[in-house]
Amino acid sequence: MKITAQEEIGLRIMLRVANCGNESGLSIPQLSEAEGISIPYVAKLTRLLRQQGFLNSTPGNKGGYVLARPANEIIVNDLLKVLGGALFDTSFCNLHSGGMKLCTNSVDCSVRSLWKMMQLVLDELLQHLTLSDLSNSELEAQRIISRVFAPKQVV
Image (cartoon, rainbow, N blue to C red; front, side, top):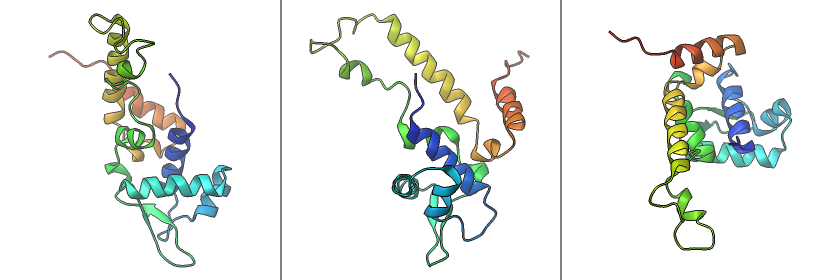
């Protein structure tokens, strides 16, 4: 399992914009400098995030990017799926069937069960986290994540 650069950097850009505090937002050069990423790559990601409704651009010479909605309404799971897709998609097995048209394990596959379960666990966690939750310090974000992931009490 790997986190792609696009997911990591896209999330960092969103956090940078969320914590900006400037109503005109942050420009592509400002984001590039702050994150140590090339201007073309930042432009690519901000364009994707704008097209998917996560960012708005402010016009003008001093314009930049701002969140399209409040940080507490931006679900991390939605954001990561736009940036890189799900960890496991059911079409994965069709794409990696080897030299045959169908995977030899297409009927009974315990590995597929593992990937599905991992995706369910990740979705459960990420669906309960917002950009606002991650806008805190690392320690506070860890507390929030732990609270979301805490075992459910049986009543």
